[in-house]
Length: 205
Image 1 (tube, rainbow, N blue to C red):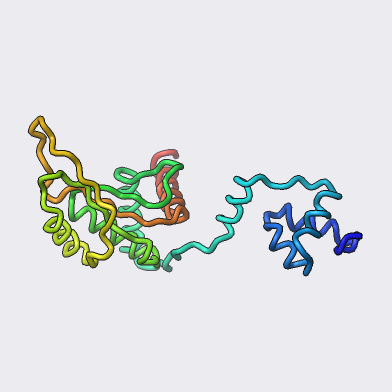
Image 2 (cartoon, helix red, strand yellow):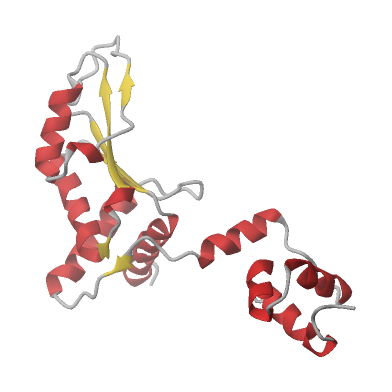
């Protein structure tokens, strides 16, 4: 006999099919996972594979950021600026795990960071900065420059990449290339959605 009355089996199937994980269904029905598994098997509701289950679990997680209420004209203008900067200089592939904006221009980088801070309430633990620089450049002085420019502590600068010196006399950027990173794919999704909204408004009409 099932621990779940037969007249409740349909509800179990509907809860699971809505995207709830089995543990959440079991908690809602006040039964064990085994009882839920038994019912799903009896009513022939297919089990989700690991990839689908992982995706649903991720979507159910609360984002690590929130969008600020924007009511000033300058905020909406900054949204447009930030979206265009990321469209031009940001990593946008599906494999990305979050925001990755790369540039060597200090003012441009600071402007993009200002966009992130004005549009969103961020978890500072997920915001960090990385430097790509050449082997004969002084990383400490480069870090000091960017830390002062962005008004961010050195503790948020990590995972730097040192490149071999070029043999062809390539001009070196004095402060390397800065990467602004925020590890939450949902933030990337919101920025890409913002880009799409401007594309639809001004390009795809």
